[in-house]
Length: 378
Image (cartoon, rainbow, N blue to C red; front, side, top):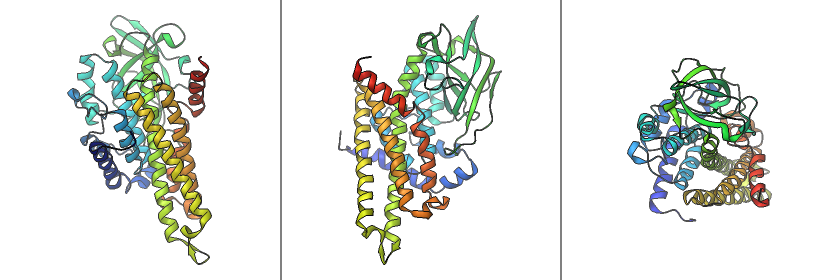
């Protein structure tokens, strides 16, 4: 697991080349203009990145979670924001591929894999973040439909996405009363809040998803009633790996920028790379990134193998990779001095983008809770 085979190397290099050619040159402009580059994401999908671990019979690439970690890290070297959205889109597609019936798979997945259709994951609510099982969005059966009312918060891609994978309460309070529904953009009663003004992730929209008497056919439910919380958490195991990989990619780009800058910048008559204290900082940054990458790879291998400790390892890897990624990017900014604070150098954008990775897909405090509960047998 510590040496990539020929296929894995080719996959990583393909994604890294795409990031360098299509994402990196435009990332600062997209951030400034708050532009969501759907056309470029569809180019990524044409290379197989719209359905990385989706089965091939519906247009997916049929790759592993380990392969996905390589892809999302590589994409994030060009733009963490776009890599992160593509990872969320893949998570939604996987939920449909895994829990949907054949009719549902055929209906939505070909379009999702090509990214002709975009997807959003809808779990968090204004009053239910870390305590996701307390969600209030209700879906009440009425004949062959559910009537859905509620609000989802911080939804990536909202307003642009075509397919919304929504966790809603169809039964009693608690995790066992939640089901997963797929709601299409044109459903009457579905609307969206204002585009949030954010610290980072400006190249993808983040809005509320508002449901007012939205009628959703029973045929749009993924799996049985009452398993929605389990579906949501299963999706997040992979989502946590993906967002950790995005942190590694952004931090790797920041490290490379800092190393280049330090070789060019002179102070007190010599290049910054000749100062031992700064060399040690670079060495620590590279070491911490490699340690985070190794843990992430181990967690991805465990998820692929369906090991019983996969959820714990995914939580460990997400916490460690996102904390490390932000710390490395922040140190890269410091090594640039005042220039790191200027937008044109691209470092401050990486820092802004990576900060939210410590919050979403489960806060890093919740990751610690997952690990602690496993250790104490709770």
